[in-house]
Length: 249
Ligand code: V4E
Image 1 (cartoon, helix red, strand yellow):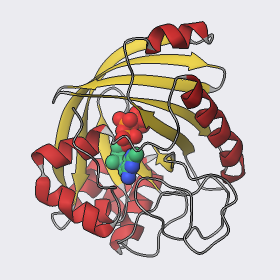
Image 2: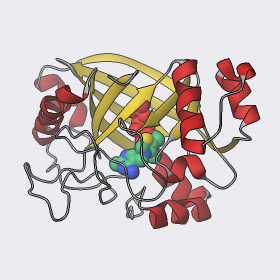
Image 3: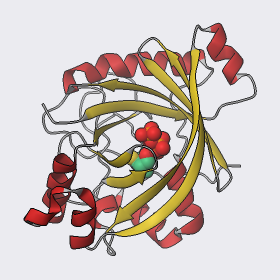
Image 4: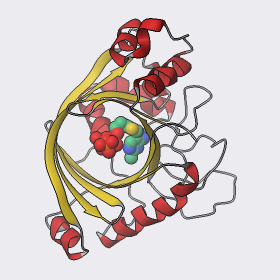
């Protein structure tokens, strides 16, 4: 089993009635918080082009969101389908679970599945693997590896978040400081074989909140890049890592 938890999540746009609907469904407010995220990459964008998202989250520390199964190279989206697969093929950006040319076991979804690594050893090991570099002894902590690998901050923003819990699911209602709001339903599992059931639960709750499960809603970082780092954004569109997100209101 890979180290770190696996996050199955789908984004949607909350409306004025979303919180009341959550409470009516039995969800409880789990807390409110605000935090700054700083994202890092090589100057030639080799991490994000390989669908690896290294960030320093205020109050949480270093986190690496990456495909549960390491990719064989940059280029092409790495969203992992809901159905378990030892070698997931590249998919269309936006997290669709349909593999062209293959039988479709379930309806397409815009949900995404990422592994979240938080242990310094796992993060540095994965970074070195993606960048094809042998780890150096001083890189047992993430800041040493960030400096040694020449990683640079490419995005920084604050999120105000209200979190609800309903059974094993979590719903985050986020407002970013650059003027974008987005919500997500999320389940966290420990192993790839638990992903299909988690995906079903996530999609059920999203439907109960009035969303169809087929509309792609971009995440905060996608919109940040689109607005503030357009060359980086275009590069990720070309690489198939991000969907062509519509500019949100
Ligand atoms: C851009 C991106 C990633 C980094 C940001 O992850 P995200 O889940 O959007 O941030 P946040 O703050 O909600 O994190 P959480 O607190 O839930 O851990 S990870 C993967 N991507 C790419 C990506 C994509 N291609 N499509 C969609 C719909 N989302 C993300």
